[in-house]
Length: 448
Image (cartoon, rainbow, N blue to C red; front, side):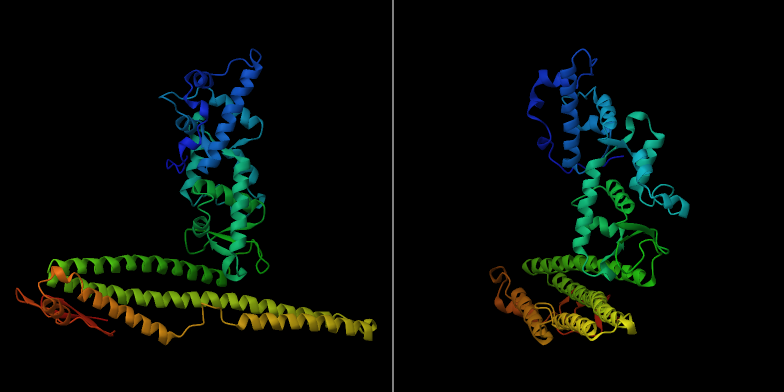
């Protein structure tokens, strides 16, 4: 199974001879006996081998089938008649491998013994599951192949990316497979290929694939000094995963609310231009409710980010504590017979240097980050009030030429109580309130 979504320009793939009918007819034809024309056979094999490997890198897909290649390299309604021989030769040379054999060779032997062979026996992801089903129950032309060298290169890139993003081993060494894929999607855009990348890294002991006890998802744990790579998920790790997932959900919600807020503001401005005062008043009320919801979610997001940051700080302080403990162990390990003034003096001098370095580290960690903590919340509130005031003034003076008079626009913004068709609109609250009312059939409904 391969993705139907192409993320590359086919013109970058095709060679210059692609428009040469004579040359391409020869390359599209079946292979003749190698003994008859060894050079022609070799040139033809090198042409298609190079083109297939180039397509792997350009499409960022390490898996493919004969059927897929025939579709990619179709020319003027014709498909190559020789690719089956090309694939067999590439397999013989070790450039590609069948998916079944690749999985068998790269699975950890302990998986089957421990019943943790999630990728083989009970795949959670549909991508690899469909790949496996295609191999085992489809016709031979649809057999899936793996470009082994390209896949290993992708695995190296993913590992480097993740190692560079680890700030704290407490918070950054554990994440869901979906989160890891999102971080590396530019390297490996296809989920079915990404699962094979994870399998390679698991086999190389850079990470482990774990099962969340409460959710139907795979969890990735990278190698670190704090946790045994194959141990079950701890409560701390589960808590960190939950925090990170809630954080992502809040970020998505806030982004949607921001778009909704902007849309309501624009609609209200259009309603003012069209002199639809009732509609504009209703849209402004919805905008205010959206703004309050956005502010609540933003505060919750800040709290979660603060918790994650405190965990990272605790990690750093724990490293300092380990330094102290190491110094203490050095002193305790010195037996009486080993005690000498020279040795004690040297050891204490070394320990004093270590402690001095640790003190400097702690002082550096205690300083507020520039641009992160060094701000005055009152100044932020004043700035926010000014922005809100500017927005109201901008809406008040919007398109004066299209409004009958300045007095009419001012009256609209000052008195949003409109009596039209028997409907009475209350004033829009200009300050934050614990309760707001929305007019429904001339009756206020209180929202907590």
